[in-house]
Image 1 (cartoon, rainbow, N blue to C red):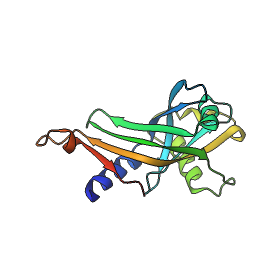
Image 2 (cartoon, rainbow, N blue to C red):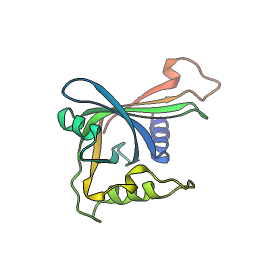
Image 3 (cartoon, rainbow, N blue to C red):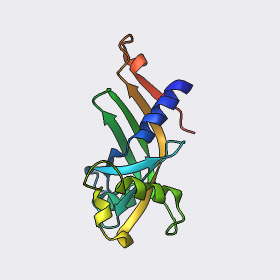
Amino acid sequence: MDKKRADALKFLQEHRAGVLATSGKDGQPHASVVFYVADEHFNVHFLTLFNSRKCKSIAENPKVAFTVGRLDTPQTIQIEGVAEEEQHEEGQSAEADKLINVLTQGGSRFYAPLVKLDRAKILLVWIRPTWIRWADYSPMDKTGTKSVWTDIPVA
């Protein structure tokens, strides 16, 4: 389990974009790509606008799902958890500073969309995981659901 947990955490921390699924009080689903950072406890931190659908949905129903996947090596991590606003002061949040770095770096000439928007309207959100599943379909010598899916205990 320790190796699979370490592999799952490494996968989550090496990627920078995932899909966030929310639903508001009306129960209608909404999914969007967010740029994120993750800590050693699988907590996911991302930025959004105060007036976004995801912000409204989180305020109405903080239960969310978050998924990161890749095709070149078939692996995914699925997280269910509770999202909440993360309080911070400008320049005093390690997660916010890491996110700004993620949003403004890379080999592309394009940046993540939030860097083009008014920072005064941006909210830092924290997802505290309640369930984590790591799926690694890449080993060629193993088959079966038990060898592919691993539920990672939440700390």
